[in-house]
Amino acid sequence: MLNVLINPSSFAKKLLTLCLEILVLPLILVHLNCTPVLAAGTYPDRIVTLIVPFTAGSGSDILARIIQPKLAERWKQAVIVENKAGASGNIGADYVAKANPDGYTLLMAINTITMAPNLYKKPPFDPVTDFTPVMKMAVANFAIVTNPQLPANDLKSFIQLVKTHPGQYNFGSPGNGTPHHLAMELMKLQFGLDMLHVPYKGISGATTDLLGGQVQVMFASVHSMLPNVKAGKLKMLAVTGTQRESILPNVATFREQGVDFMDSVDAWYAAFLPPKTPQEIVNRVGKDIAAVLSMPEVQEQLAAQGMRVQTSSPEQLGQLVTNDTARWKKTISDAHISVD
Image (cartoon, one colour):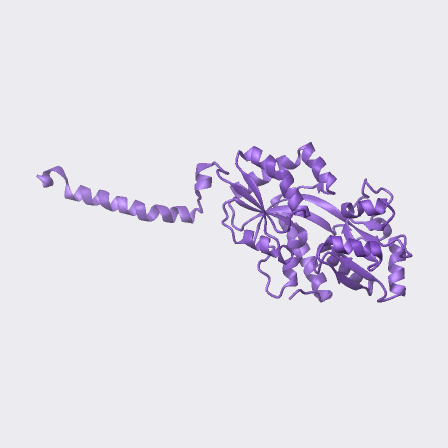
């Protein structure tokens, strides 16, 4: 009776076809690098985490917390900020470099990502190859600032003073290998200056000793030095960037004072995803971050923190990372800087 109801040959063919589908379909999906997110077209459909590789209150943390609620509103999903500080930003960056490439873990980076790995003999990641660039978000210009007792009122007189008295002046920084430190090392190398570096554990201690005269000069963001400069407690000799700061129009740029290699010495902020993140997700994240950064209220909040919105394409950010990594690698090598 069973032989009448079921054709053995037909049944075997159907069974074989079903087995092949079960075995082959997953391989096809892997080959195409498909993910449930892309297949469904519903990204994001769960919590997105913004990884800040520094402590709360840092520039990248402030930026992340400003855009957080706006992204959550656009995505109709929770967006959280998680601080993973340590090793000059390497711990948080390495976490993202090793995260799943599904778009749910973003790195809110500052340009230390191109500096810190070069300080280690065995860096945990390669800034050029181990991330997917999304977009540059903002920039904060730097300035060279001195104690008011230093007998120099512009860049030329400062350089001449240090050259005339080698080894007699100290410069402070928030730590070894920070942008503040490397900016001055670049100046030292270019002009042959002999100055002692005094690293601190953060910008607060460095600023206190600059005010007290224990160190005579420091590189720092324009905004962080603004109150003391306006109060006459510090002197600002030059600012980076291609144009003067509107909040300090009387302070000339480095370029105006004959120094052209300091234009792009600044603090830039950018978003990155893990390597091999699908392009559709990169495009979506970049589009939404750009939309948030274009909001007047967001730009006002960032401006109050000394940041100017400056966006880019993924390709432009990738080139920036490549160029800066090469520049700071050479500076670190030539100045013999290391942390291990």
